[in-house]
Image (tube, rainbow, N blue to C red; front, side):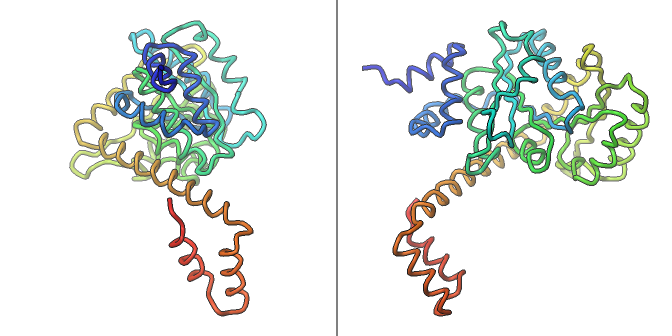
Length: 322
C-alpha cells in the first residue's frame, strides 16, 4: 500500500501544484499528518533562497512581488510566493488583491502563489510561515518570496523568516520618519523606494540614506565585513528598477554565504520555529487542563495565600509532558 504522505511529497517534488497546495493546507489546518509531512520534507529543504518583503499598505508590495517573479522567471528560476495575512480571521488568507495583481503568472508552471492567514495559529507568523516555506523549498523552488502586510510585529517576523529582507517605501507617505520610529531600519537588508516617478522620491531616498549613514542599520553583519543596506528606486508597475533589486538580492546572498551569516540566520530561523512549536504544544497542554483538578487545586492555594502564582506555574509546568 502506498504511503499517502510519501506519495504527496513525491508528487510535490515532481512539480505538481495540487500536491504543493495540499501540503500547505496541512500547515494551515494544523493537520494530524503535519508531523509526518514535516519529517518527510526535511531531507529536501534548505536549498531555496528565501526573500521577505514588507512595507506599509499602499507602497506596492504585491505589484513589486509580481515584477520580481517576472524577473526571476526571465532568469529561468522557479518561484514560490507566500502572501501572508497575519490578521484576517475571515478571508482564510485569500488576499484577492494579490491574486489579481499576480494573475499574469497564474498559468506559469514555474510559479506557485499562495495566500495564507496565520491568525488562529499558536505562534502566528513565526509558527506557520517557516513550515509553508519548507514545503516550497522541498518542492524544488529556487526562490521563495514571503510577502506580509506591513503592520506591527509581522514586519519583524518576516525578517526572521527570510535570508534577505526587502523593505518597501513610497514617496509622499512619511515612510522615512515612520520607519525610523518603528525600527524598520533594523530589519531591512535592502530598501526600495517604489513609485519613484512621484514627487518626493528624491527626498525619501536622501532621508533613507542619511538614516543608514547615521548607523540606524543594518540589522546584522560582522565588524570586519559589514553589510551596508542598499537603497534603490523602482516603478514596479512598469518594471523599472527591478533588475537592480534582483541583482542587489544576489549580492546580499553572496555576502551572507561568504561571511557565514547565511548559516547563522537559518539556524536562528530553525530555533525560532522549534520554540514556536514547543510553546504551541505547551499552550495546548495547559489548555487541556482547564477544569482539571490539578489546576483548580493550585488556583485554590494561590487564592488562600498558601502558594504564589510563580511557584504554582512551576509546579504545573513540571507536571506536563511535551
